[in-house]
Amino acid sequence: MLRVVVVEPFYSGSHRAWADGLLRHSRHRIELLTLPEGPWRQRMRRGAQELAERARRLPPPDVLVVTDMLDLAAFLALARSWAQVPVLAYFHENQFTYPRLKGTKLNSWFGQINYLSALAADAVAFNSDFHRRDFLGALQALARQPNNWLREEGIAAIAAKATVLPVGVELGWLEDAADLRRDHWPRQVLWNHRWEFDKNPAMFARVLERLAAAGVPFHVAVAGERGLNPDRSLLQLPDRLGERVVHFGYADRATYGRLLAESDIVMSTSRHEFFGVAMVEAMYAGCIPLAPRRYNYPDLVPAAWHDTCLFGSEEECESKLASLLQHELPPRAPFRESAARFRWESVIEAWDNAIEMLARRSSAAAGTLVRP
Image 1 (cartoon, rainbow, N blue to C red):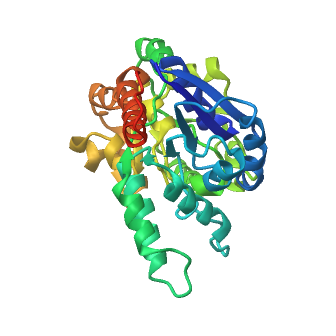
Image 2 (cartoon, rainbow, N blue to C red):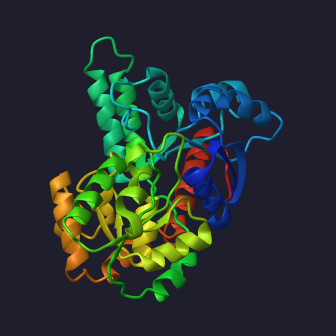
Image 3 (cartoon, one colour):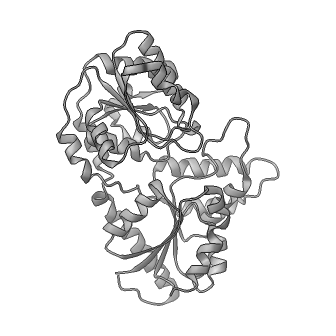
């Protein structure tokens, strides 16, 4: 058994769920070194300083696992005795391709943190193959720009040590949602994402309003976190759709489970998706997905159902949603099976093996022996 410290400057939401899941399921001894939820920019700028100070009071672990929110190069320099510990850097998201508000530019500070962290790590893992390709493609595109701060050798080094480790998702608690599922009429659409611009709720609202105006029957449940800047179009949805809206607001766990059991279709109009935990949860509970034909969605949705469940434009989204609302739905089993691939019980072996391999490689290079 190896002693593994997970360093997470943004211990909240999906980052927290992943860290807690790794701790619960790993065969190794996992310890968490974290900062609580706070402004993400501050966490990326200051997290390494604050966490390194705490790390210096602890014995160095066998393996260090850090996330994309940490300035790894600064952390290793400040943690001193931890500088020789083998590091796996895990990317939930990245600051090169994360959507930005219209009119804003890439903040090179945060992109540089991601690049240098990947460069400093001994191994780099992404939560999906789409994300791996997306990140490396962004580095290569930036390298072609004048006055960039990247090195071709650095990009090649990151590519050579990059792999994919899916996010583990706790799905056992959704067994009851799948078992309680009943056919409803009219059918119910679920939105279980944040309400901010990067998830594109304005498009979701426009599509539903046009279908309502056309007389298409449906109910809609709007859950997910509001975020700091919820979209005005989504906020106006209860007034515009009236009794069609059966839930509106953040849902606690019990309420969320009920909404998953009651909903027929889970919908995303997102401008990005590096993985898609909310979609995995809904598919496992028996919802039929409707999502963009890009990002990581083609890997989540079974290939046989891409034409039914993935769209390339707003018009196609509206047409396919209208069809799902009014005609026979696809069988639920293929979507549930696809989601089940990401149960922690299914992915933990890959995580534990990656950690163990990193420790073995490091000990071999140092001429020592690590016994897992």
